[in-house]
Amino acid sequence: MNDRMTGALTQKVLLVDDEPDILELLKYNLEREGYMVQTALNGKDAIKAAKSGHPDLIVLDIMMPGMDGVEVCMQLRQLPEFQNTLITFLTARGEDYSQIAGFEAGADDYITKPVRPKVFVTKVKALLKRRGGEQTEDRVLESNGVRVDLERVMVYVGDREIQLPKKEFELLVLLIGKPGKVFKRDEIYGQIWGNELFVGDRTIDVHIRKLREKIGDERIKTIKGIGYKFDA
Figure (tube, rainbow, N blue to C red):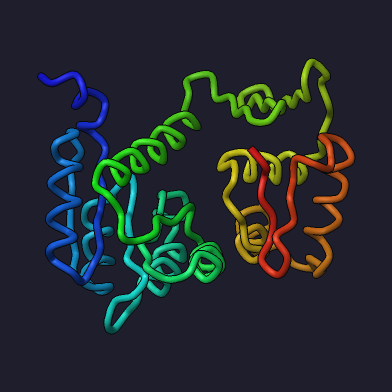
């Protein structure tokens, strides 16, 4: 077996684009690397394919007739089984729009068209490697000098151990689990507080402030009007 194919065989990618030529080109290059690839030409078929195939990564074109990529992403993120699935956008739009629309919908990243196949494959590998790194046997998350031991519920900043209350610990785990991803405020509320009652509008801000005091202001960035991210 070709060495470059090892490790990718169990990873599944769903490609969604209304241009068949682009789908075939990207699918061909991913399959050469050993990935299992599904394709869909529109949003409705994408949701069906995701539900049946349970991909590790979904690549969505933003501009599609009918249901566009942003709407597909939002619908998938509302389903429990896709809350942690990697989703990235393919878009020919301007960078600012892509980031705002994509991150607000719950995407992890975006790739700008036109994209060269080699660059695309490299990006896919990087995304899946990042996700794979979160699922280590010892269940340790580490980024930018902060280490979180999930099994022992311990946090270290450099060599210093710090104590965090339950919600601050859960918030840190959420943010550091996907370094660089912008988490919307609604997404943070949903994953940390769920259906808890009497959660005030400033709850996230207060917890972020307390967390910054303990791990350093520079590690958690505010994305104005959207939410927060852990700076890798």
